[in-house]
Image: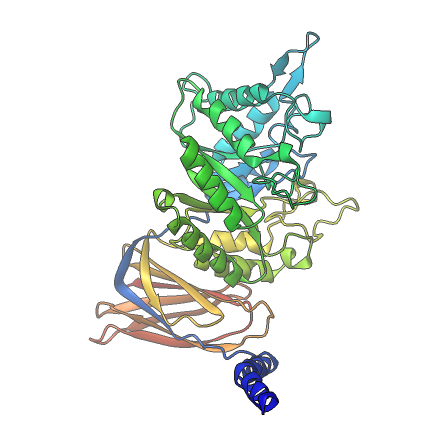
Length: 472
């Protein structure tokens, strides 16, 4: 009798779990149900200024660690970036050396040249305070801690005084980010529990951040600037909680929280942001802290997707997820490195090929050009689907709609209804441009008293369409 009761209890406990697992398996096998798009733009539904958080670019150390931008300033300027992020500023520009007496000496010439190129395109520098100058690092290794934290404090102070100083470069609004991917480059950590094997207590990011803030606090006669971090390889709750608690307990300044993310699925970026919002809610003092993705892209590895339409569609779809939820998103990266065999396209991350390969524009570059065609006022858009995203803006009387069909598997095909509502009665010119095929529609339309215009267009996988509607 007891055995039967035991079996019955087991069935009652595990049968629902079993049925749920079967059900989930069926969903995976058949594919999750998708929602088709039915885009409706309200021409009178102004939501406020259009956030242009995508006007931020990052350049890695492709040219022996240096961000050489001089040959491509014209192409970069066309994208209208507000900020360009560079790393390796302390280990790749010959900035720090020791003289014959063993004292530290500074030479800003090479780094100044790169900053001049950033300013020439109309942007400001966003500095990743990394990596350790070999002349200051333990064992000369740039991912190690310094031999003297006092030297590091002085380096941070002098860097801020040089670029933000009123008697030096006199820049206002510069960002200073403490390190680049500390969890990856150098194995920095938020503390070493006794059970954590291989954790180096000398690589505490709290220590690095503390001494960076001491140096920043000593910078004199400077313009307003922002400082923060930690630029980890993901939005990790342990880093959020530990860093914010540390700043609060020690009265340390933090103006922004930054992280990196690479994923072919834009939903991953959205989940990062949702988690970050949740994390910050646990810290009421920092709930309005700036959120910055200081590197992002579809794949952190070399891949052919970086050279094709996939990355263009992915970028627009991802930016739609970022909109109005983060402050800046730095697309990685501006240009490719130079391939060893001279190929212009070799799966690198750049929006442009290397200048020695002609600085050719990739589809992702053109996607950012198209984003720049959006107007200053954001309009209400409804009817986005599982794979179809849309952004709409208004500039005086001109209405612009940008639509992308991004399915990571590249299979989604839809016939897309697009409707403009809230229009004044009259004659309009409607033009539709396809990212891959050019202009596909140009016509004059007279609206009825209802103020509605509608069209149906096919939308193949990774298609990008730009609608422009102007009164005549």
